[in-house]
Image (cartoon, rainbow, N blue to C red; front, side, top):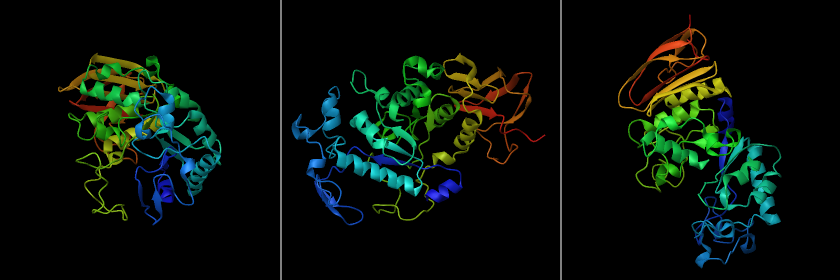
Length: 373
């Protein structure tokens, strides 16, 4: 799979667990190995886990207590003692095995529950540097903050974007400069509209969100320069614990078409905006305008331009842009990726472009996709 992804120009980041093992008292692994809560033969034994003794059942109850958050158990999951040499060496060996398979990086699940110094030690043992994204959820008044983990590689982003697009005491006109909010620098932030947890627990938008807000938020995330954006590609669900479409089996064993797979990464607008993101690079925001709370437009230097209309009526305007004179494809609707346009052509002349942005929709153009003259 990794080779196939690389051949298609796609890098692979694995969702990786360094914090804990299982939450079951006993069971059998998918390869047939028996285990108990604190004993995994050939891997970990009782002394390789934290037994914090701070709360009933060693459960995390108080997120303002650093020791409790990082040495007690998250939802009964056996908490690895990541300060111990055997645990560190084992986790680093696991990471290096994944690297040997060709993975390009790790998303470290529950990173907040591991001391930043422990993570730094483990990551320092990797055979080569890879992309690292750490799950460090911000909490007001909590002692553990995302800034502690910057040295190793922004959950507030998901909430802010959700509230802005749903009009919950905010609007998209407020989504201009994130670094003025005191967040970590964009160069050190991994941002996303939703992940597999937040799409289920209500902390973010998801595919069920009304008024096309989920898609427009992904367009915004790929258009704005703050952070490295991640797009969730997931499946439909009716309840929080629903697994992926697999014919009722415990693991997916074959690749097959299934309408329950949402494949957000294949949506024409998302695919078009990924190329937009890559084309504009680190070009700054230019010409930000917001005539209404639910309408924003901005350029990315001389390389790109986007307008998002989160209102229920069309937005007709003569936009100012730094794009060079040319005829540009609307990459939100255009499915033609080999050059030229199949739909939606906008003419930039003298730093202006006339456009109609449909209700609850967006337009975007960049210098990498123009109409063939």
